[in-house]
Length: 163
Image (tube, rainbow, N blue to C red; front, side, top):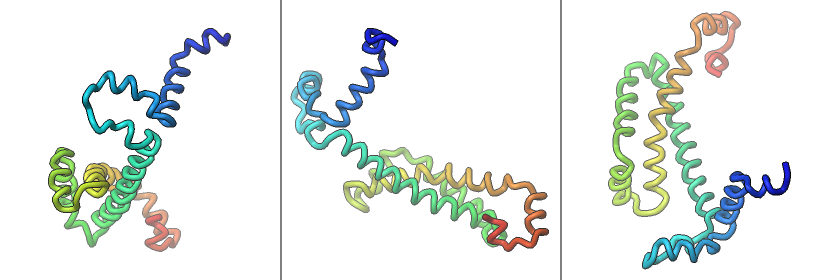
C-alpha cells in the first residue's frame, strides 16, 4: 500500500482521533467551545477520556461480577430439588427488575444510597441479572440426561457432576 492510500484510510483517522481523545481531551477544547457555547462547567476539563473510560469500565465490571455471582447462584439453586418451588419467584423478580427504566432505577436508588457510583452499579446489576439467570438455567437444563446418568454411573460425587 502506498503512502497516499495509507493517509486516506479512514481507519488511520479514526485511530488518531481516538488516540487524541484518550490522551489529550484539551485538544478539542476550541471545537467543543464553539459547538456548545455557554456550557459551564465543561466536561472535557474534568478528567481525561481515558480516566473516564477506566472509571466506567470499573463500574461495569463490578456490577457484572456481582450479577454473575448472584445470577448463577440463583440459577443453581432453582434447578436443584430444594429450590424448585422458588423458580417462578426468582424468574418473576428478575423480570420485574428488567422492566424498570434506567432513570426510574436511578431515581429510586439515589435517595437511598446517594449520588456516585453506587446507584449506577445497582442499575447495571439489575439489568444484568435477568439474562444471566435465564442463560444459566438454560445451560444447566441443557445437559442431556444420558450425560448425567453416565456421570453418576462413573461414581462421580454430586459436586464433580455439577462441575
